[in-house]
Amino acid sequence: MEITNKNIEKTPKIQKAPVIIALTGKGGVGKTSLSALFVRQLTEAFPDKKILAIDADPAVGLAMALGVDVKMTVDDIRNMFIKTAQTDQAAAIEMLGEAKYRMFDALVERKNLSFLAIGRPESAGCYCKVNAYLKEIISMLAGNFDYVVIDGEAGIEQVNRRVMEKVTHLLLVSDASKKGIEVAKTIHEVAKDLVMFDQSGIIINRMPDLNLVDQLELEPLQLLSCIEDDKAMALSDMLGKSVYEIDASSPIYQGGVEALKNLGIL
Ligand SMILES: Nc1ncnc2c1ncn2[C@@H]1O[C@H](COP(=O)(O)OP(=O)(O)O)[C@@H](O)[C@H]1O
Ligand SMILES: [Mg+2]
Image 1 (cartoon, helix red, strand yellow):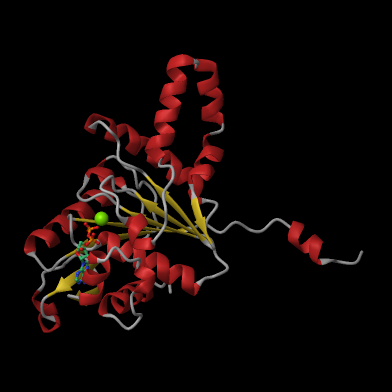
Image 2: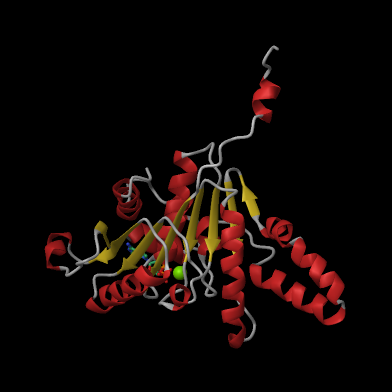
């Protein structure tokens, strides 16, 4: 039988496990900036691969850093379930069965990039529940993508709650402060018990003096890259621009590439 292109297309592809990169660390150290840059670098380096960006921080920000418009969040979908369950349980059960497809509705798509945001739960007490939901979503969706980048909430909560239960790369981000590095070490220590990851490492961002890298006490964390204070990044955020407009020669862009190379991802 003649093999046509159609036949080849029908042949099931061997599903390779996705690369799942999660960024975590203290607040304000550059997790969102670096997550967005990683997403840009992956979408540019692998135009034929599917990339999923997840904003797992209720403080939001990744959408703006990537220049995407969010119409629906994980929290919106969760609230829809709750509302339906209150009035019609049978319908709610049916909706749960369709959960995966509803999540696809919430994805913002742009070329080879898909984007999903956890959203900002209205009452603080709800956040643990939306975290549990997010965990299900990550494991449900991840298999449909080649690369997943998760911009985590500041601190240890999502590691504790095992929202990022199974990732391939756990990246700790910190500024050069002792406090930030301590937080990174603590998260790493807890993650060793609660998160399955293949590789981990630390990125030091906004380093005041690159000559002083040796002075940082990072052990047992592996240094993936050390990035100096970068005016281009600060300006981009100030003007609400996306990281796609940042010059590829800028220190933070180059630092991101270096980290991905050190991890063998690029
Ligand atoms: N290398 C850098 N140089 C200068 N400013 C930076 C750098 N990295 C991040 N920033 C700025 O620091 C602020 C916090 O960064 P952000 O990525 O939002 O941190 P996080 O997500 O960890 O809270 C932002 O205004 C961002 O533009
Ligand atoms: Mg952030």
